[in-house]
Every structure is written in structure tokens, then in C-alpha cells.
Image (cartoon, rainbow, N blue to C red; front, side, top):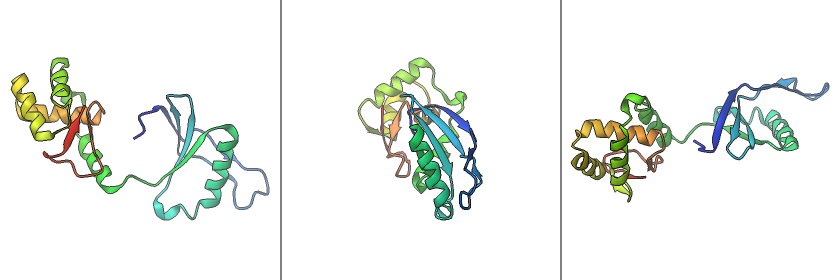
Length: 164
């Protein structure tokens, strides 16, 4: 997740290669993203096993991007732990899991210094009087929304360090 992304377009354009370009007729990149600093980035999504097969096409796409000042990326997937954590956190992305403003402030205060999830939850429960199960959903929602942080490269657990 790149927090600098402000806009995304799926299959935004077609690159048409000149006649007689060996083995290439056209290419439709998977995504275009606009970054907060105004830069553009084309992204092709491929399974890692298919990157080598498309190497010539990717090289041509990268050259076209370089010529117009865009970034280019070949996305082959997230590392396993990060992917699993994001799938789990995605279950809390709905607004029904969002804390009210006072609770959100209390939660962020409890995690102002990095703390284990269970420790911060107990602090938040004491300060708000809200049940742990509701606060857990609130914290996971805030993690999904990137209003709280954790190392998503390791499995999330009640011992995971969380910070605001």
C-alpha cells in the first residue's frame, strides 16, 4: 500500500507499438495511479511465474514511461504474511467498525507510544468504559484505515505492537 496514491484507473490506456515491432502489437497496462506529488505510475500485475515471459513487453512499457516521465511497476503480489494480515483487516474496513470521534481519540492516545494490542485495548476499555470486543473491532478498523500502525510483515496477534 502506497499512501501517496490519490487516484487509480483500471486499464487506463492502450500502448500501440509501431508496425514491425517484433512480437508486440499492443499492450493495455492494468492500472494507472496518480500520486499526491502529481507523478503518474503505470502498473502491470503478473504472477511471478509470468514476469519472464513478458520481459520484452515490460521493457518497452518501461521505456515509454521513462520517455513521458511516469514511473513503471510490475506488481507480483504481496509477501505472504502481509497479504494474510491485510485480508484479515479488510474484514473490519466497513464503517460499522469505526469508532466514534471520542473513542478514536482515546484509542490513539492509548497507542501514542507503541504497545501490545492487548495492553492498548485494556487501557482503552478503562478510559472509555467500552467492551473489549467493540474496541478490538475499532482498533482493527483504524489499522485498516492506516490511522494506527503495526508491522504487517509478521502475523498480527494480541501481542502485536501497535502505535498511532
